Every structure is written in structure tokens, then in C-alpha cells.
Image 1 (cartoon, helix red, strand yellow):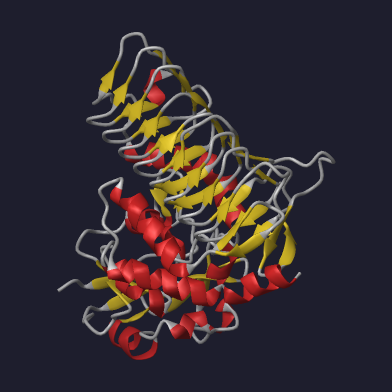
Image 2 (cartoon, rainbow, N blue to C red):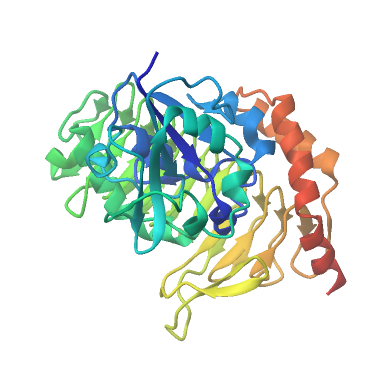
Length: 425
């Protein structure tokens, strides 16, 4: 029996990361080399028992892919439980900032709840229901009776903050891994490497002749079984996930690609969650792209306004000022773009939406399950969307599950209002 437990919870803030969190918990999002949850647990002892509290409709899917007890605190019988906000951008020495041992306490940063620690029995009795966190009007009301300790930590609020922090987080994760200069894969002798001490090539990875790896601006991490083909230039900081294939082009600093992606053309300071294709020419910058996305040839997004003013992004039906000059696009899972698709600065494209280029720049917000060319839209029929997802995953030898198909149906239901509004305007 583990003496301590760590429970990562979602709060109402997950909504700032839609559409990327329709099928995943907010702490599964990537920033740097690791996901948010991997950063949170890396500094605690192995015998700590891991839990999470998430939106109930995600629970079954998460049980199949995360090393957590999901929405099930009843099994914990240890001494203390540390609850950690799932939007925390955790530093490497988190156990010093948020110790497992000690009296009940809450940890806050600039008035926001980062974490709190309670006795094991109280954790099960009072905080076992995920709705306690999801329905709280603010984190101030969670564990408000506990003595507060001010800590220096970062809670992310919107997706573009992950993109903004990505270059620095690649460096933090790389340094914490202590893998700099370790070449375990195959690197052709005709590869050009600048600052080799800041490069790691994992086992099974292959880097072909004519590749340039420039780590002078930050480290470059190449994952297991990744491939980098000739005529690819990689500028650090950069993280290339396991099984990802770079097919040529220019990868500018600040990029993180999850597992099994196919990447070509020009990509600048962007995050791709995994299993997505940007195989062809076209520019993607300062963007976050989900899983199982396919970007057609010459798909390009703007990430800088001609006026050099701050970019706004539509969130929950209203424009939010990012206070940033460079912001690209945010694209949900299973979405596809046709050849020549043009996306505006700060645009959002929902889950399982199909759009086709050729008629100008698309609107800044496109709901989930839409089908159209920028002028005429219709609803993407749910069963057709599920069937297309099944075929796409089979091409990578990944089977769909009943849980995933149910998530499609739930997401279709949750996003119906947005579709009606677009079609009625």
C-alpha cells in the first residue's frame, strides 16, 4: 500500500483549451517534450499511487491509456493525498514545491489554487466526485478552509500559452532528462550538427545524409524510432516524438511533435499532439494541432497580423485578446483540410471538421463536425465521421474502440449549438 497519493484534477478551466480537450483531459496536452501530467509526476517516488478526476464522459477512454485510477478515489487508503490542478505547468523539482508529507494545506500562486494536501480519509470522503472541481465557480472555493501557502508556479489558461511556453519547456525537459550529447540511434556521417552536446538521438532513430541539426538556439530531442530524411533542417529547441517521420523542409525552433506524425514543409514554434500529418509544403506557425489531423498540400496559416497588433482568438463565442503578436491556429482531433486551405491569424477549427481550400481565408471560428469550402457549410454526418476516423486509424494499425466512438457521439452532442449558430448566420 502506498503511503501517499497524487491526484490530478480538472477544473472549469478546461474550457480554455477547446477543441483540443473534447477527447482528452487537459493535463494530457503537450508542452515541451512531455505532457502536462508527465511533468507533474516525474519528481515523485515510484510507490506513490496515481489518481485523476476528470469530466465523467472521458473516464472510460482515459482508463485505457493513462497509468491512473480514473474517477476512483475509493481504493486509496494511504496517509495523505496531494491534489494537483491539471493546468499546472510543473517545474522539475515539484516535490520540493508541493511536498507529499505534512499537515493539510493549500498552495496558491497569485490567488489561484495550484494544489492542496489532505488526509487520505478526507480525500475519499470530500473530494472523490470530479463534479466538485468542475462545478466550482472558482478555485478559491476549493479547500478554502485550509491554511494557504504562497508558491511560485504557472497555471495555463489558454492553448496559446502552451505554444508560447513550448520553447522554454523543451529546454527544461531536455535538461531534466540528462540526455544531452547521447547518440543512441543512427546518424549519417554526412549530417551537419551544430552544438552536438545539446542533441539526443534515441534508440532506433535514423537521421539521413544532408540533414542539418542546429542546436545552437536550444536542444534537439529525437525520439525512439523517429526518422529524419535528407534535406530537413531542424532548429532547436525541438522535440521529435517516437515514430515521427520528418520528410524534409524547415523546422524552426520551438516545435514539439508527438508520436507517429508525418511532418514536411515549414513549421515554426508549434505543437502537434500526435498521429497527425503535415506531409506537404505549406506553413504552420505558432499553432497547436491535435491528433489524427491531416493537413492537405499547401495548407497555410497566418500567425502575424499585417497591423502588428495583438491577436485575438475566439473562445466560447467571444474574442479573447492573447496579448501576443504571433498566434496561429488551433485545430481539433480528426480534422482535415483540403489542398490550398488558408487559415486566419488566431483561428480555431473544431473536432472532426473537413474544410477545402480555394475560396479565400476561412472564418476565424469553425465548429466541430462541419463540412465546407469557406462559403457553403453543412453538418458532417456523425456516422460518416466515425467511419472516416476508423479508416484513418487503421492506416496506422491503430484500432478504434467503443469508448472512442462514444466520445465522438458525446462531442457531436456537446457542439450542436455551435453548428446551429454557424448555419443560421
